[in-house]
Image (tube, rainbow, N blue to C red; front, side, top):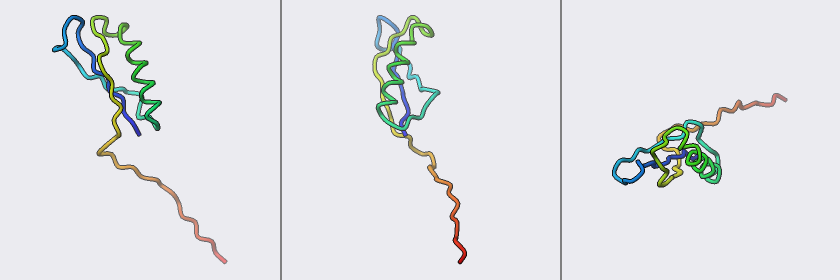
Length: 77
C-alpha cells in the first residue's frame, strides 16, 4: 500500500515549504498514488493560492500491522 505526500512551497521562494499528506489513501498501487499526487497539485490553488507543488513522493506504508482475518473451516467427515 502506498501513501501520497506532496511538497508545496510559497511562490517566489524555496525555503518556506510544507509537506502535505493525502487523507484519502493509502492506495493499492503506486500508479494510483501518483495519480492522486497529481490531483492534489491541480487542486492546490483552490486551497493554498500562494503555494505551488514542487515534488511528490509515494511511500510504502511502514509501521502498520497488516493482517488477513480468515476463518479456517474444518470439514467434518
